[in-house]
Every structure is written in C-alpha cells, then in structure tokens.
Amino acid sequence: MSVLQKFQLDGKTACVTGGSRGLGLAIAQGLAEAGSDLVLVGREPETLQASAASLRLLGRKVEVLSADVGSPKESEAAAARVVEQFGPIDILVNNVGGRRIDIPTEELSLEDWQAIIDLNLTSAFLWTKIVGGSMLGRGWGRVINVSSISGLIANRGIAGRSYETSKAAVISFTRSVAADWAKRGVTVNAIAPGGFLTDPNRKWFETHPHLKQTFEEMVPMGRLGDPVEIAPLAVFLASEASSYITGATMVVDGGYTVW
Image 1 (cartoon, rainbow, N blue to C red):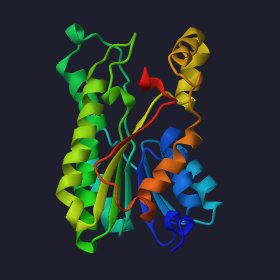
Image 2 (cartoon, rainbow, N blue to C red):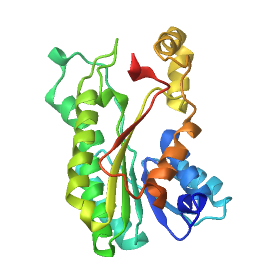
Image 3 (cartoon, one colour):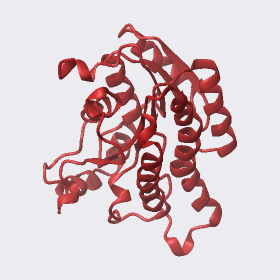
C-alpha cells in the first residue's frame, strides 16, 4: 500500500455529530472526499437534509439523524439508533460542542454549568461508549474527539469557564480511552481547533468586528482558520495513515498557543 493509499477511506462509514454545519460539515466533506460514506447527526432536520444533499454529490451514501446531542437521554438513544440502523460504523467524530454562555464563574448557575458539561463532555462519553464501543468486536475503528485549544488555555475576555473545563476533560477522556482500547484495534485521538471562520463566528464578528481584529492579533499567522483547513487532519486520523497514533491531541490554531 502506497502512502497516499493509506489515506483512502473507501468502504468505511463515518458518523459525525454536529455534521451539518461548521467544522463538522467540513470534516464530513473531507471524509467523503477520501471515500467514506456518512451518517450526519444534528438538531435541525432542514439543515441536515441540505448538507446531506450537497455531500451526496460526491457520490457517497449519506444518512441523517436529527437529535439534540446535548441532552444526555436523547443523545444516548440517538447513538444506539445509529449503531442499530446505520452500522457498522468505522469512524466516529464527536464534533458537537460549544460555549453558548458568557457568565462569570461567581454568577454561573449549576443548571448552566451542567448544560455545557453535557454538551461537550457527556456527549463525547456516550457516543464513544456506544458507537466507539461497537467497533471493538471488529478489531478496527477510529474515534476522533473535537476538543479545543480552550482545553489547554483559558480564553481572554470571555467567561463561562465550564467550556474550558469540559474541553480539557475531553482531552483527558481521549487519552484514557485510548489507553484502554489500544490493543483492541480502535484508536482514540483529539483535535484541538483554535479560532475558525465558521458561519456562527462570521455572524458574531459582523456585529462585533473589533473582536475579530483582537483575536487575529493573538494568532501568529494573523488570521482565523478556514473550516476546510481542519478536514485533512481528520482524514489522517480516520485512516490507516495514523495507525500508530492514539491518545494524541493535535492543535490546529495558526500558532495561537505558541505564545
């Protein structure tokens, strides 16, 4: 097998949570271009269907499932349904996540704290347990958890530290499960993105243009990332090209964390 052939995903099926927009959609498209069929999971049926239609133009089979992955009960049921209805799943991308709040710790309610923990961490646990666990019996699989550079640092000028906490926990969870599954053929790795120009961020910067400039000044490359720039790393981690890598967290941030 040549080096380039090791990146091919023909015959594989990948499930991407939050796969209908933003980084999740960019990752899903990259996996499809490498040959993988897809299962996209998201909250909005219309967005899911539109994204699936565009991805099917690549000649891949694309299934969709509407579910709120931030709700533990709904998330657990959805993960089980993916395995039962669309399995076997070879590649799992736990992409769902977000900050959603800007509340100082001293004012943060338990309810708001728990909601972010469930969105970013509990969802990764449930989908890894159910979908990733279904790979163990076949002796091959890839789990990719989308963490954040916020799991390595504290973001300046914004509160809601449940986000940093949950993303740091995702990194630790990744290492721990990777150790458990290393001899069973399933690798578990994490991607830690920095600032990317996703659609939500574009809208945010339209109303807060000074924040875009402030953020870009903190990035050695002087710009935010384009979502397509995360896809090649996801393809690498999903493929045979990364067969000797597990438990790793790979940063994609234009150099933000080097300062």
